Structures are given as structure tokens and as C-alpha cells.
Image 1 (cartoon, one colour):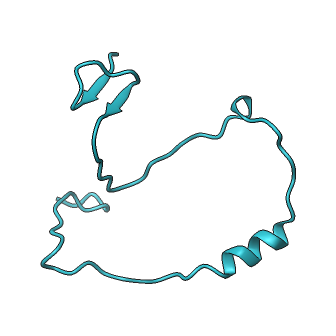
Image 2 (cartoon, rainbow, N blue to C red):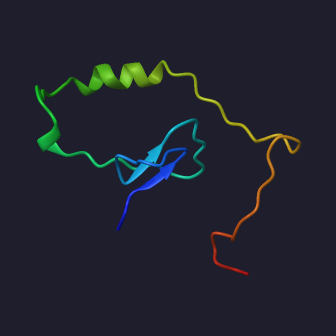
Image 3 (cartoon, rainbow, N blue to C red):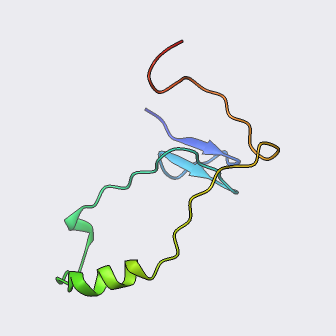
Length: 77
């Protein structure tokens, strides 16, 4: 397989994007111990306290801002 470039004729990676990008869906980045240094365990209680301080919202998109099209997730067509 080759490399794909958006706004470039010379992609350096499997996908190279020069410019802004909008993603709908999921972006997954695997975690590989070979790429890490200085690994140390942290106190989960402190991290839960940090998460509890986050302001979390529920929302829907305005109809005039976003239109949706696609295949239903349950596979019906």
C-alpha cells in the first residue's frame, strides 16, 4: 500500500494532511510500551478527583448547523 497525501504531493506517513481536518467518528491511537520512558504508577484517587472537576455537558446539534446522512447502525436499508 502507498501513502496518501491531502494538500501535498509528498506524504511522509500513511496519511499526511497539510491543513485543517474534521473527523466524525473515532480516532484510535494504540498504546505501545516501546515508545514510552519514565513510566510510573500514579494514585487513581487523585485522578478521579481531577475527572470529577470536569464540566460535562449533554447537547444536540442545531438543525441549521449540521445535516446528517448515512447508513443506520442497525444495518436496515
